[in-house]
Image (cartoon, rainbow, N blue to C red; front, top):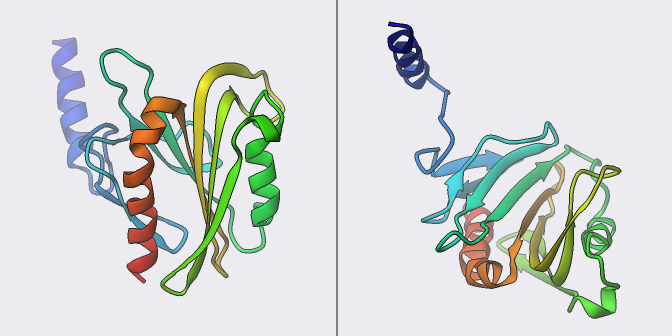
Length: 182
């Protein structure tokens, strides 16, 4: 009887407007800042794990391999630091020095907006700023910073290098789709 109450409560929550269960059934479209994103096929929406995060996706790994994580940040107008400060911070999240992580940036204009793409590969140090770090060897970071007068949107994909390399094209399509939708 107790489990029946839980099932009824779960079903009721799923019917509440605005409530979305995490996972593959989470919304395929979502908004961060002023930009509307479409979740790539095969990627899953998950509940955010920090109040700083505005959206979060999971890229499942193949055959029990570790998956990847895509995190979206938006701090509002004039917050979150500038583009270069965030690029430098992201490169600093690797154990190796910048010259050893194949650090790359690429600035582009899509529609009316500037976007800066970021890429690095090496031993990624995951963890909250100022907290303990976990070394993740053979990892890759793909990032995009979408500039906006309403506050830039920062998108960071991290995971095993082989998975991130396969995710690069859908990642860029997701970013470009949000910029072209304006």
